[in-house]
Image (tube, rainbow, N blue to C red; front, top):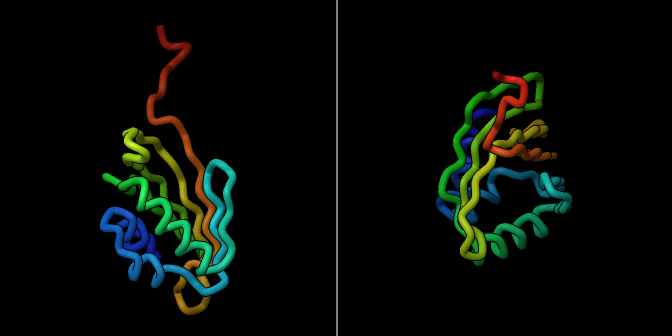
Length: 121
């Protein structure tokens, strides 16, 4: 599962549509951290093409990886340029895999990368 998540992240960095497609089952569901959902491989591929026409992933670094049964959780840092604006944030991916080892359901959650300690003196 960890290799599959790493390959999926790498497909974005390399803009490798074939590797992206290999990551998912035909009926996969993908939920982005800010609301959009994509249902099925055709929608996922359309989103991948559209996003990469406007942006580039600069890095997607896994900080921690957990797995149980057919579920994997990756904590990461993501950096990209989209519509000419560079941005980065921390996040978490929760991925459920089917029996063939393909991603069946993927949900992402975002956190600001800059953290503060409001009670530190």
